[in-house]
Length: 286
Ligand code: ARG
Image (cartoon, rainbow, N blue to C red):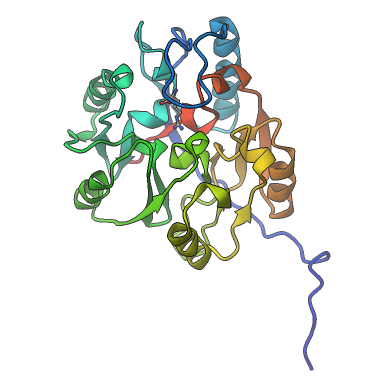
């Protein structure tokens, strides 16, 4: 006799939050003065004080969750520095520096590397073009690595030689989802028993990459175009609490169904630069 399970009565699994240490950068000099992604329109006005207020809410949310939040000083003339995820990739006490695609952001690379060095991280100066955690996502013990718009695949090899982890290349094909962290959300960063899950936007990837994602993450949450279009996937999870764009209502419901605790934050002003929650968050792993 087989016992049928009714999905509507199957309880959501119990999720475990793990402690996080992150680096953020206050958007004191935020504006949109150049266009390096389709979200940015320099002719439209931005309000730096609104950006700061919204960012402060994100900061306070993280502090409220018990995270250890470090700050790097913003630099005048580097309006995108608020998107700290692009500042590097940090794991095992080692920091692989960023080497930005566009000249407008290139000075951010050394600024972040100086911070890593001053804070006791072993810095690897990058040879290859890469935009840090914008395109590199640690899921369990593998690193998902995006390419197509910013980060060069040659850096995927550099990354794997520095950290000795399996690096999986994924091709992004939609310019609106130009960094991997705009198309994939890591939901269970810590677990290494194979249960770690992700959420993603299918149309952001080419077929070979989709095949990899489907095979590796058969239970992934597939997010709607509507939620992705407000950078709903650009979120940050501690394994239980998932900080997401407040307007991503569908994703919020999907997360709740799976036993996560979604927390909505409005970063509409920072969306004008093409970034959301995750972009403003760089994980520091000792
Ligand atoms: N204006 C920035 C850029 O285009 C936004 C960066 C967003 N960061 C991210 N991790 N997706 O480079």
